[in-house]
Length: 183
Image (cartoon, rainbow, N blue to C red; front, side):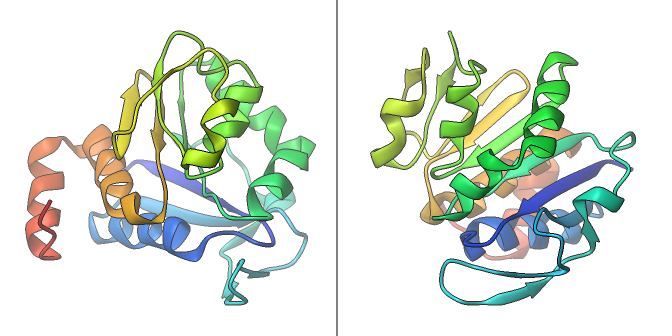
């Protein structure tokens, strides 16, 4: 079974993070909510408190297939400031494992040089941070082991792109039908 770690920092965007968790779990993909705050309860940018599955420092990522970085402010800045997570992101990228981000969070990948020569998208205000990327206005971009998405309104497309990466387009289309999602 595939395993995905979704990272939560204070000020995360709840729809971007929890939509991914929901869609993956519906498909039987293990979606682990990981706090980088030292607390199992993390508060979103809109003051919604969510209980995590694990703390970063107590998690073994050796069986993890994908990292997901939700956006939100100040959540994105908090993710990028957490050096243990950035070391993990670098390790996944260097080993060709999936690294994904939505909304403001693709800026993290841009700052780390991971988007050079790739198609990528982000929240419009963060497009200048997609260093070296061919910036698009598509809802989602899949460029090898990197998946980026524009924002909250693209959260379902982002989650379905992740499902496609692990289970194929037919499974993602079946899930879209099941949740009555029409693009």
